[in-house]
Image (cartoon, rainbow, N blue to C red; front, side, top):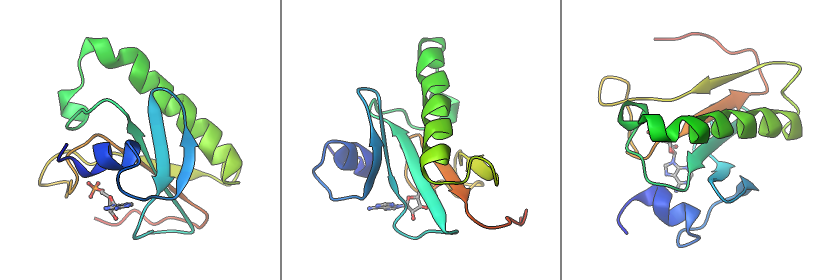
Length: 112
Ligand code: AMP
């Protein structure tokens, strides 16, 4: 298995787990951009949001449900947070396994 995030989800590479269920794994970003920076990934390997298919509709909905739960447990549900998924080179996607960045805990700027 060569995908970094597949290996993290499988427990082969250490990570700081925030949440896990049968479909999703969530862990702290190694280079946090804000006080709260959690990565939410499907256990199934999907390259990016561009590779999603109709069959992944329920999974994607579940990832957002997990994000809501994590936002609560991280204490940012009321103050607000950002969910980001980078797709491809121009977006700077560096790990080619679908992930939601859940970022919060401070007032976020929109900086391109
Ligand atoms: P992206 O640039 O959108 O593909 O995001 C990949 C994210 O994965 C970056 O924010 C990295 O800091 C993060 N990352 C890379 N390797 C690890 C790791 N071993 N554990 C936790 N986060 C990681």
